[in-house]
Amino acid sequence: MTIAECQVETQKHIEKVRKYIRFITDKLTTRGVNHDYTKLKSPEVELFTEYTPQLAELEYGSDEYKDYIVCE
Image 1 (cartoon, rainbow, N blue to C red):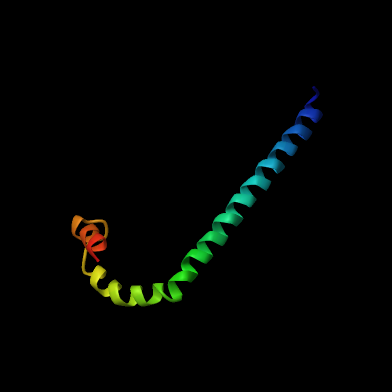
Image 2 (cartoon, rainbow, N blue to C red):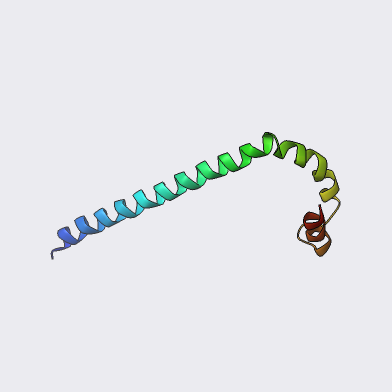
């Protein structure tokens, strides 16, 4: 294989990797948008409205926080 042929093959590889990374990041972005959007609609918005002030008083991830999430 010549240097030029190696460079062509390497460029093909780079483009293929970029294509797959773009595919994955596009999927993640779409999921993120949809995931966050549901928080603005029923029934999530009502639950967030009720429980966010109470949870805000607790340390995120603490045992008390986890107990509150499970009990409610």
